[in-house]
Image (cartoon, rainbow, N blue to C red; front, side, top):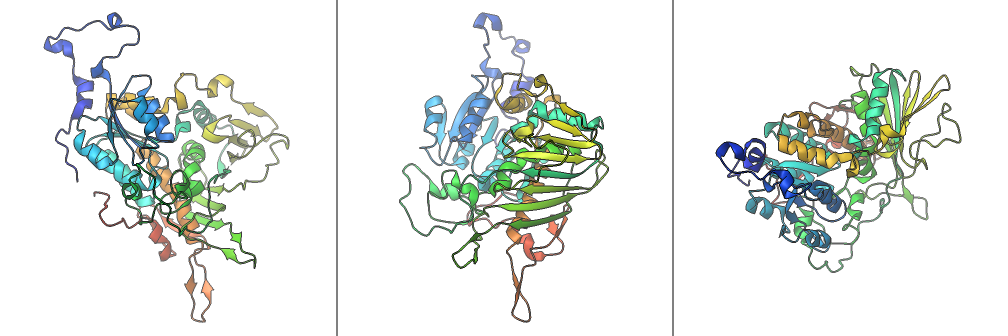
Length: 485
């Protein structure tokens, strides 16, 4: 494990140091020009994963110079080229382990890598007292999510998961509506997405194309089972492979399940059941490729009643273009969820239905009385002029203020919330992956015990009525890799 030679770090300096108290002359800020920020007020941030979403995460935490991008790490320097150009003074790395060894002056880290490396990178940074911003889903499996949640409190780290809709006005509007009792108790939630928009339900490639220049494939594979490089894995298409990604549910669940999870105050699910779509061969035999996420799936999670919602809740998830049927209470010519109904959330209550699109946008209520309630535009727009609802900058300010500060407590996706949310979402993936597990009976017939309702002991992270399903709670890391606990 990498040791931290300075457990207090610059964050303590940023929070506590007052140059005036030690007799150093201070030039008034207005003399330095409008918007000037002293270097001592800036957070030193290391970016791990700088292509695609990693680039936008980098730009959002930088925020026109209010933070300092001190280091950029990416295993693929082709994908990181724009980041290197944008910040030529930032130190460049291919291996996050080297970055963490060499850059003790780093205060905080963004992690925008494929799902399978989130946990090992994030925990290593937290153990060095670095605050962390991690893209959704928080982790690749349930056990990793539990470990990171507990580590954030143990090491007193300021954390945030990158489901930016959680900081939006739309989600807060839905919370306010529900808390006022407008739709009453909810016992059914429907959530759906048009993902995947990448290949899924396909054969594992067997050809071996030449590896890309400037790509460290061994580090890219990281703790996952070794496979040779293939463009069906990198870039982006890794989402459709269980070895690296978490499928459509992992990709969009943290965005779409966040509003009902937050509004209803849900905890760990107690039951889960899934079914998956198949691609058929010419003789009508379903093709099943266990390494590839399915082309479509349906999952139901059951949650117990909470202090906020005095009823159990059955949450129905569908992906692959499948969506719930149009509720009678919503006029037939109205979209459900997004404007094109491709993604969305429906919460069915005693007195009416509350619905929203991706990121909690455009919340609406359809009451049993026939009344339609729309959020005023000012309540749901991003009016702080910061991208992605200011989700990144809220984390930056909380890092400066410190663990336990009011700014920290105000974060919408710190790991104490994002961890259990991620566990619930990955619970659905456990059921999806268990669906085609089969056992041979005494009369040489196969049964599929995974094709039933699975009972979940959340506290102990265990399926209690089908032992084989528990193989998906955690993964065995490739030799040479460890979670570091």
